[in-house]
Image (cartoon, rainbow, N blue to C red; front, top):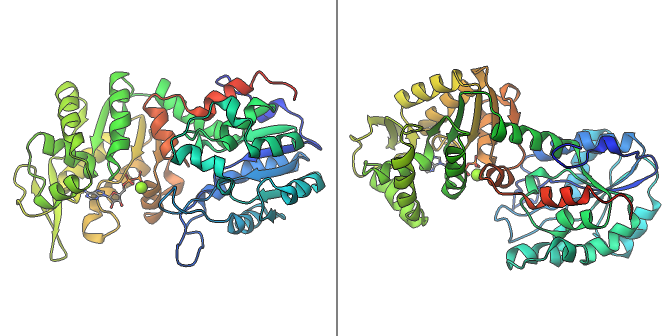
Length: 417
Ligand code: ADP
Ligand code: MG
């Protein structure tokens, strides 16, 4: 038991049918239907291998959305092929989730065999709950088709989908009501890592917040400042731009237009309030960069031309941030410092990411684009921990109790069906 949740160590697995919920949701190339990245599938491997090695009959539940998350769904068939290759063993797949064909296949599984079911979101209760904002209690989720059809075939439910731990859905929170359940190895590792950051970080603890998802940054900033988790927040990307705009600093008309167009205007007021309270711990860029005719230009904050768009932090800021990161003991990172996808505006992200690789402090990094930047600069191995969860991570750091954690804690009391 860790954090009130059971772990795989508490169960004997040989001959047992185990339902294992994983998060293998990856960016998909919409033209070809192929996966653009496989990092989450790779992260699922240790738990699946352990279950199979221990002689369990492994039934995997997973979802795959499109890039616009709750709009289109893709089959999990390509994931089975990738997983088989990573595991070096057969992974069966069926184009059914909980119908008669899937159930028959589950009954036929032998010890050690692995079966991946098709996308759980093809079962409507899984996603309408979220999309229509319908709230089913966890008890009610246990009465959905998915749980009613699959639970009777299984001995144990394992949740390894930390990246989906903020989703209140039957495949994630329903089985814990009726089956003995525990977290998988990846979930355990990610949950322990982020709990450590939140509860007892080595200090100084520095947060690096950039990128374009302003709502995420603002969700967690207040909590980590109020609770004294963050000793310093280094801002970049649009997060920095919003603060600068709140302080009436020029960020360029292009950036202002972007903020207004994206409905980020509401955050300007919040940024002003937060800065008024925590100016000593929120660090803003001292210089900014923009691109003119393909050429990078920089100016100190306050001297930016009005008609440009601030799309990166400047060299001086990158140096200051790098020094703070190198002397930190814990660094949490979410969101790049600028539009790093383009060469003229990549300097800030590149420099900060290099500092992350160099620091002796423990680095925790999350967010799709932040991971892409890490891969782009070949720094994956140098990071302390790369979290597969974006949304779950942010919500955890904003102090919310994650629905899956709640369900698993509740499930810790269930011993037998
Ligand atoms: P993550 O996926 O790591 O959580 P986000 O999705 O929040 O990060 O933000 C990543 C995106 O933000 C990148 O595509 C990057 O180009 C963009 N971005 C960063 N800085 C700026 C900026 N100043 N103006 C506009 N876009 C920015
Ligand atoms: Mg992103």
